[in-house]
Image (spheres, rainbow, N blue to C red):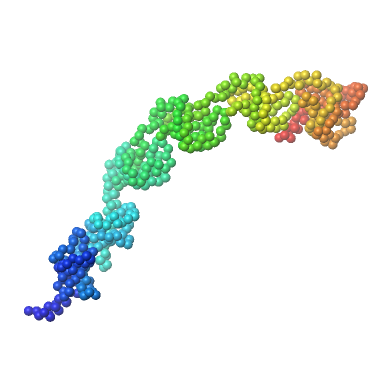
Length: 557
């Protein structure tokens, strides 16, 4: 028989740090469990090493790993987990070669991932938890999942797991199954997974489909977020399937009838509609008359009378407007609208309201090189051509006699409703002086006036009755004159004799040098004029007016 000393010596050899022994649970405390392993002192196991599935029970025998034979209190430090780990390691490695699948329970969140109990502790990296990033991993703690073994290190005795690979494999299998079954026209349930500027990606239970923004609504939307939000469940229509690239095109608006199918019957020409301005462009405004149906008001259809260059001057996005349907093209999905048709066209009554000869009053709205525009009423302008400003004066620019903002009287000369034009004149308010010129001036009369204009060939003299006479340079002095400006100045008062009146061309010829001639001298001068050869002074006087007109025109330009 063994003596007491021999038994103690044998026990001491059996109990050493790093060995695994069997013990009996003696007591369960708040933070530790007291275990009798047959050693000279009891051992302690941390209570954290037991879980709810296998709680410690007094009297039960458990395997423990001896970490330290004696701590400061003289107790043996034991580990139940390490004993289980050592016992299970070989069995787990055999059962779970790299790539095998094993069930485990998430034990805790650790740096970089999760700690999982699969019989031994294994590590699940953050990137391998799920197919999508998880912000809070605490929700996995305490739950049991299947994991794929991706790495086993015998030397360090650690195992790396992946849950993501199993999910991806399952999704791939499910995706292929969905792709095989889907056909265009199917209506399938999905969940909005992501939103972009061009559309939304919808999860079809493992298969992602694209719902393009143009297939979300028959109406106009600027961004998918106006209709959808992430996580929203919805039924979508399968539009197209590319099984090789695993792509599915989806539609939402296709579940509803196309509003353009019956558009011609719903909105015949002449129908009044109400809608919202959804877009403004340089050539017009787009109006949504119902979801999916927009009409265009061209800029020319905004007003009968006002010249509108930009629709944004009179309309703004979001504004409710009323309009009239002008035409419908179902094939091109276009509706032409107009707002001016809601009002009476003032030009329809212009001819009756402004017959020829009617005296009108208006404000000069604009001046051009060829005339002036006068506002007769809101939206209706009359145009005075430069030739209708005066019977007697040669006016090259209307600014010589009127200016913008002047209130003037005029006479209606013509009304062209088709081209929306009203011609008016100022000179027609008075009698044409030239109709009775003989009562005012005769050849031989001596007249007085001021120099109004100078030209290289002579000078224009302003006479009474708003008439101008022309003094040719040859008729200024007995002496030869090289330049007219050397002897005459604008505004200078002069006396001259009328030597020619041309009613046809509305011209008066004057002579300064003949102003003081006696009757005998005039007769002599007349004889000399009659004897002049072509190309000399008489011919020059005949063509002086033509030359004056051309020179003044060139200066004006």
